[in-house]
Length: 240
Ligand code: NAD
Image (cartoon, rainbow, N blue to C red; front, side, top):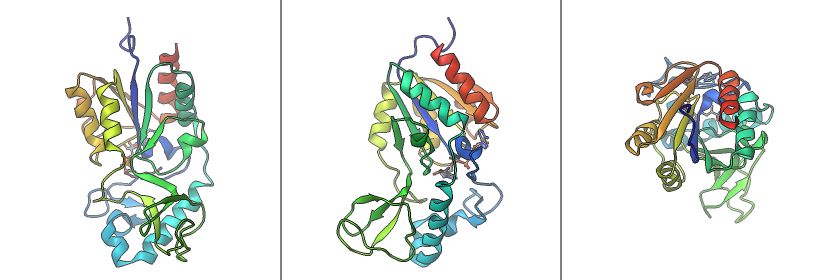
């Protein structure tokens, strides 16, 4: 009996590291006061907070317009493809909770994906509170396709805002047998706390990452390496 035997329900948390080999930057340490560092040459607090949007909406909208355009040029890598294979073949419960705002899980074919930090390819109308699929720019203040108000913003959860669908995530953790964290630094809460919640619930925990995350000691097991290698190897193991 290996440690992965008897597993039925799986919750997988993914972070920027799973998309790194697709050419999408992770946060780089060292920069701003948040301790999160730089994101595409910008301090996180200048582009990814509600205060930044209030102070300089054009800067923030242009930043996300560039990210939204860039992400559409990228392709899923073997780590996304492996999770899509697991999603398609796994008979038990499976939920991919992603902190990523790119759509690479979906484009590789995964169907059970929850975007806790929103999506680059959505615009959120702050007037009528609807979300619309959005692939173009927002800086020119286009009208909301639903209500016509010029009040669209990126549907991305900024620092200081509440992540989406937390009740569903905690419900999935409560019925999970295995929690797997892939390519996330463990610096951004509440996602960084999922491993502790899982441990409190008696769930088995596994970390797949390039280097140990903050809070790595909470995991029963850690496997280090690039996501394009360690994730397919783990999925092969799960699918026998
Ligand atoms: P992070 O940038 O803080 O950490 C990235 C993690 O990935 C690190 O632990 C690093 O060791 C690991 N990593 C780097 N290259 C890897 C590789 N090839 N294989 C495996 N692991 C690798 O990212 P985070 O923990 O997801 O938190 C940052 C926040 O940034 C999230 O809220 C997220 O919404 C946002 N973000 C999203 C994207 C995206 O959508 N692709 C990109 C950057 C940041």
